[in-house]
Length: 397
Image (tube, rainbow, N blue to C red; front, side, top):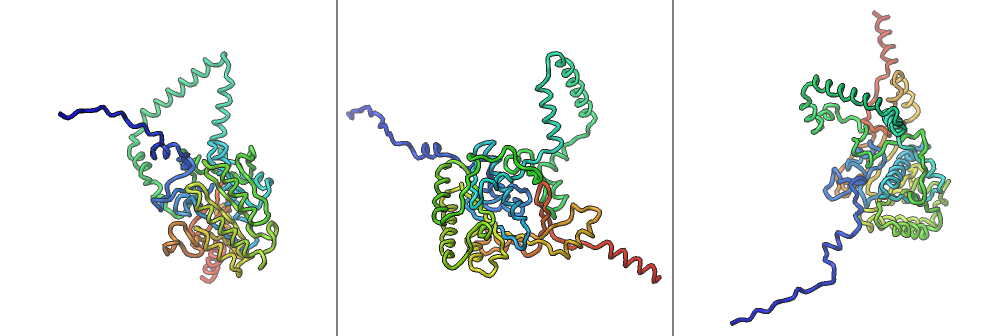
């Protein structure tokens, strides 16, 4: 007969792969990142501008990518984009401590110019009501309960006389109302549950409280190799956070040393190291660079920078003659006057496969108080010229 021996279980002190994977820090936070609308493998973060998130087709800026913002002329609309990008990261850092921002080439004073989160009049009323409720005393609690009962009775009465809202709910669920409104404009506010993902900023006010060292780190201009080491050192300090890197006014002679044949090779190496950094930190790092394309239109540095970037957008202000025409056409509604064209020259996850992403001067932008509104470009009709033609026709008749 065969004998049966009791076997003792083997104790393995090594952690299983699943356990080690679950204990690893999760950088993908549902409140600060989303799956891409264009790719099944990409994760995106918000640029801080709702219209720009839609314009990039992914619903935001893909992680581990570089976006280049070119601007021609003497305007400074690109600063609106980069400051909104930084302000969005600061808000997420203060609320859920999930994001850190690295500003390259600027001093801490630049961070004090970030825009404040927009507060509507409705939100202000809610805040005032909350403050008043916190100051309620025992003497007026009975009065507040009576007011609450009256509001509840009025709410029930309104619901008893309200028709069936089923079709409206279905239309909202499947976005039928949005389809009826058309797709000529990319501007608009985000839903309530997306406010943590993309805030609305008011450029007329400065952010309070200001960004501190836990929110933003600055890397001053020095030797290009030293700047690379400082960026990597900061990244190692925040291994579990999403890190936004920005380089405003890149190679602007007012901030950077003059570009010459002696330092051109070092700049190329610095940009290549930035590309390596964005690809090394999986689902953690994104980089935004702004540059004046008119300064380096005929130099290879601009072409090299465009080749390294995953997404490239160009801001082209309207000429003065066109701006005057728009002001005449929209004299009754000055808020409709656009300030320039915004061109999508390269798109992450699409352009590398040889796909065309857009043409030239198909979209225009309007720098508003709360958003950089992006709309399809169309030539308006000058009402004054039409009126003159009508007057001439009536005189000839």
